[in-house]
Length: 458
Image (spheres, helix red, strand yellow):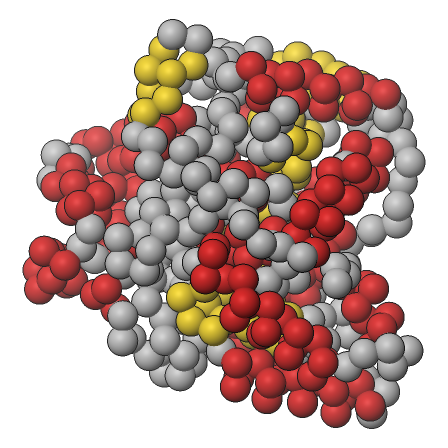
């Protein structure tokens, strides 16, 4: 059973099924399939069934809204009242928050059903979903491939239909990269559009929170519920006059052949829809990852300063190395990064005087082997972490909204993703372009994905 949010709501309205039936179906599916994927740390069966009964009562009373009775999940760095929230770390393995994160309150007021808390890289420190404490998240497409991270559990759960949508966080691509790796849609909204209150931060300068879902419309409906802002989701069969910018430098460089093929195909598809394709000067983009690392490394070390003093040896090796590197970042380095951030915000914003959206691949490579530390592209060796964030981290620094959509499968049946970027608060434009693109380009992909995971077994 694979449903969109609107189809599920229609089913509730017409009494084809009930929230209790749907919730039980998802809980049983998680119990049966998640041992293979490891996308959940905590499954909240009792909470979900209680919320389902409440939703059913409202539906029987004639109440309907776009997320009433919709089963979602939350990344395990997002506080949930009276429900274990570990941040993916053994340090907080027994932590029970006394309050919800703001986004949880908003979605519970919309009467969603919370299925549980998703697995993740420890405290969001990495762009894969390897986890030494709770086990690695497995890409549901291929068990030896990374699911991306750090919101990998969220993306894997949505891909395998273990939730209709999930809420993740993104400080350097952590929503968009796993969405691309798992063949789903992920949105990093405009900076501060969605509150991060009640979420264990990685970097307050870079952190964003947003939805992961199975298609663009569902992603938009979840954001509507969060922001209480309406988006025009009227289907369009063309993009006539929409100006799509392609970067000449940095964001189009050094990608593997599979991604290059998908990128060129996407350009052709957008052009066939009537979009105006235009190259844009991005020669100002240099040392982007270095700037992101100054914020991520120094700010995460500050966030964790109390835990570091009491529990340093309980962190994973990756986290310990991050904290050690932070000692080498000076106040001058941090101030220089802040200045660079302002320059980048201005220059990227100016691009949107020339084009309506930008388009890049989400990652320069297809999902790698889960244990891979390095990647070689066209004879150049790069760390896997730096490679996976190369096309996405810029927009954490500048805060522009970015949407990752699937771009089909490689010959080895591995998903890749494309990233659309717009000016501040133009999520509506991202949904418009993404919605049109997927209706023309992704019908076969969605059919394959849904059939693959309909009776999912390894």
